[in-house]
Image 1: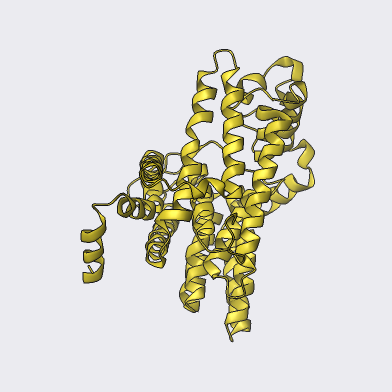
Image 2 (image 1 turned 90 degrees about the vertical axis):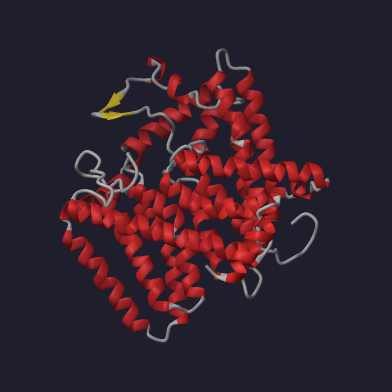
Length: 411
């Protein structure tokens, strides 16, 4: 290990901020290990930062617009949950996601204040997505991963996980690493990593992750073509690689391309369209305040909202698979407009950082990921599922750690 790194550890691991920096860099690795280690790391960082704020009387982070919007949304969700009969689960879920807000704020104001801290997080993200991608491809070829984990239902890739969440997990984590390599003008490494990650996502059978990754790679491809003088070679190589992927697995091509297009073409009668309609019906019955956090799964099956099946497809899931539908059904119009306000403040914050002429390409990658997560009609996991929430708040805090174009106290 580098002598400078050893000296840093010796000087800083006895401080709260030092531990915050190390644990923040550990989060992508923890996500590979499992949900609990990542959640524990995030929670510890949030606690350390909160204690540090108390001891140093530093509360400037609470005045940032995106933090204010998030805290208002959190406060409302807690108050709403408190009025649900037997709503212990709802109240607990609403209360504890405060840790994500504090964690993201700690990154923006504390843990990632130095470029070296961001560099550690980049390395951790790069090696994490590289491992997951290679392990996923290995599992596809040999029908089990390097740890012996089998495919889910003998079809979907899992890698180190017990559920088929590999594709969307890589899609949530790979953007900073591929944009970072591009920023360093390591063109071949960036292209290689992007294609390995995209191949693993495609082979995983995760349609949501596939669309998500494809949209993130569009700005990456734009910057790649701007930086490289070998534009023709890059385009031909990537087209050929994608063509090989399609030809190599007709069944996955049918799922990832044809099935996705068919679902998009008939979205209102698709499984996702059905659950969105159910969310609208549930929300319309309680238009102002919704049914409460985590209550959609219990209210939706009620027969007053219609039969549970329509042409063989379920109309109810554990959540509506869209953040805006989730907030409307469970938080009503108050929750929905609160979430929209939060999304707008995040978008404004990103814009103010991106408009700097020499904006970091890593910031572009983070912004692409965040914009995709906040798109109104995106198909997504629940806003409160920790394995999905942690990458979002990790990217948000990371992006907000960059200085905005206009340096004001409200940035």
